[in-house]
Image 1 (cartoon, rainbow, N blue to C red):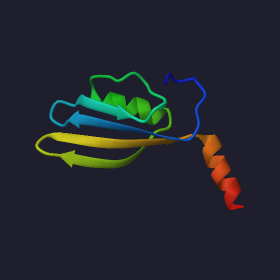
Image 2: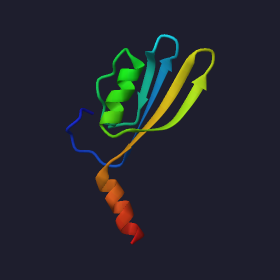
Image 3: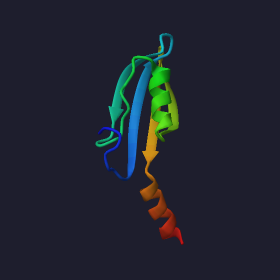
Image 4: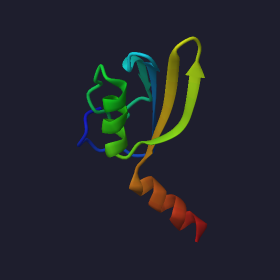
Length: 87
């Protein structure tokens, strides 16, 4: 899904990177997750997704030389509904 299209709910991206070269090895997403273009550079890919609202929920070391980032995005409509239900 490209940025700018309507969507709602939570979305997940898993980004696996090589530690010593800072290269993106794999990317997995939930269906309809808003995405920025994936860059070869892991730090740039993470930066772009953080800038559109994703949060890093977990980081996992994968031996011998990789790290996996779990990012989650929750839109404001869903958050507002959850807060309204608590009242």
